[in-house]
Amino acid sequence: MDLTSEQVQAIRNGESVPVVPPEVGEECILVRRDAFERAKHGVEDDLPGALAISRMMEAVAEDEDLDFYQQYKR
Image (tube, rainbow, N blue to C red):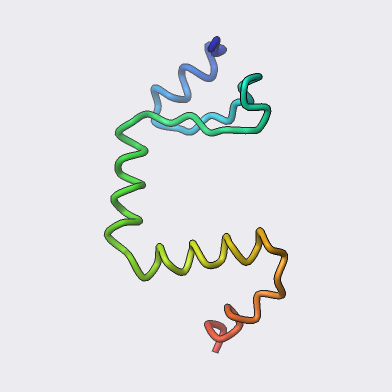
């Protein structure tokens, strides 16, 4: 995979970089392993939060009305 100098610099700065590999055909996000591990462990350390995020993503994917999440507005 060839990256532009701007993309390389962004990754070196710890930023994420969106890419569309031709083999995949969909946008993916490149991040350094240390940034990924911090994010991964942050979610794993907050299991209730991770469960809520997972449920929200499933609901959005299924295009539901998100009634389940209205209870959190109270």
